[in-house]
Image (tube, rainbow, N blue to C red):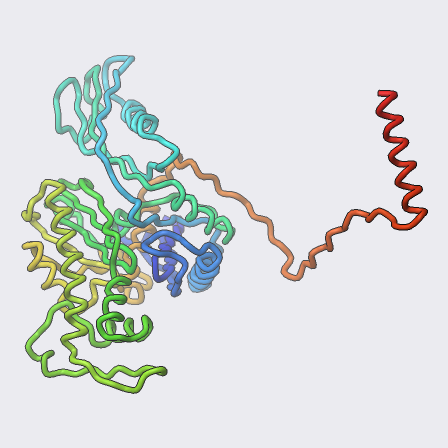
Length: 434
């Protein structure tokens, strides 16, 4: 109950750090939280190590100060379009016969790790879909059953090695131990979905700045994971082009006047655009909203495609739960409902929250970070990841670099020539003796 877990979400536009522990009634108490803007990643993948490390250190420091704790280790999220999944089937024989033990199940899962391990990709999660004992299928937990042949189907979530290693590198430079790496779609689901939704069937859609994460649950198990390689940042660029403004002005326009659905009233509204390099002008609000609507429609269509690929058609009993910063645009839930033909609700990371900073962190931008805390409190750290936490020594800030000593130059003039002659003669003599 006294264990403290720190979740850190390194996203495309921000770094969020959350400190939490168990509270009463299996709830989580958030005792520290901080968020910093960060431009060190693109579409979920880190592209500027130094910029990311600075913002990472700032967010963790502020969250630790608020929680009055010293942070040495974290549970980190991994995102980006390189996250993908596959299903795997494996079989082992119960050598000792008799009842199937927990160790037999763990041995089966270890076989999945060994079989699917490669240098190009890292296995983040191996999640059982069902087990089979001596031909009997659809078993959720085989421990205690009698049988000789244990088989199982698993959902294997992988990530490309280079971008995943970069996450480790950032935390190493920040002198923080990475206790576990969790795929961001899975973390977000922990903080926003109820047990009833997971059991009935639900699709989580986390609209971030760089990517849109999709996680589909049914019968209480994760069934499908996908990452759509664009999100709110692409929407901002669309606004920039449509309205002829800078990227900073486009973000302000999107936040203040943006929406995902065009209404008749908007046709009469005009939006003022101010710029240092251009005179003040106005545009119809419909131009702004139409640029947003087109891209959000494309994202919703990709989500509908993922639902079809997963084999659930458009019939998810509890529909879609939207979270992430992009989910806050007015009308986005209606747009997703129209495109996917599913019920849609806005998901905030409050499902597991008890005492603590519940109100302060109820924003969808904290969904992944709070989910990382929840995952860390419920699961033992993975021992299968191939990366090592490296200790980086502190370097003195004002350390002066020692001048490089140049090789002595051969002396010029008669004395130099004489010295060179004797040196060469001695060398030749040594060579003859050898």
